Length: 356
Image (cartoon, rainbow, N blue to C red):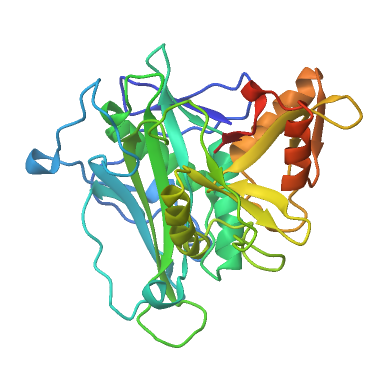
């Protein structure tokens, strides 16, 4: 999907040259009665309440040459909707960015009853703002919600709400080809009960903020720490889902990597020390395989230890359409990479590249 926002008005236009796109109406400002469907199934864009930021709620935006550190700057608005098992979803709202009030006994604080997504809006050279395949992020978010026993929702309705949120904050989308607006939809269990069980209340919210390049080194090669004693995920677990509980245990390993002058961790799995991911990203390797074929290879999803990335899926689709080299989803180990490097089958410019 490539969803296009008009940069001069609170409207979302449609383009579909490559992927399917979704649309949205201008946001409603003010209150009104619910006019849409079953709140036990979803919240609805038609019921959206918008409260624009004013005065001190509007913050200074980064300058065009200002360095943007990932996740340190937020736009003026947030979107949210609340859920409980008795009434279903509340009407969604877009409001000025504000703190969330939460009980200290909320399940998210004790049992990691939480999930999130990560997507971006880009400003093109034509000054138009686009989302890249947001329907895939929403589908993954719903799968993760099911696995986390959190409430379901209509993906298209959330995409429409996010489009309106970005329309309000369109000047926060960087005028740059190397920066973008990061979008973080999040769903948490909020009921204040300490028993381990299904959440009976939850909150979905969406934050946005401008970001630059993920690594301080920019688009340069990075050093990786590969240590088989550390495992990111395992079959039957939740490695294929975007839950916060997958990330907290990796922070200490990342610190170990930094101490060895490495920017990220190359995650290995199993007795064969198979390569799975790099940090929080999928991995591709372009090499000459043992049969002498040029091949783009990435680990498969069948073991449930790899997050099915949107960029991963897009690169596989495009590479297969090009038909210029072999494209494979299959397991390979750190020993396979070392052997290929020793034999000169992976050139310096084609060592493992990583895409989020």
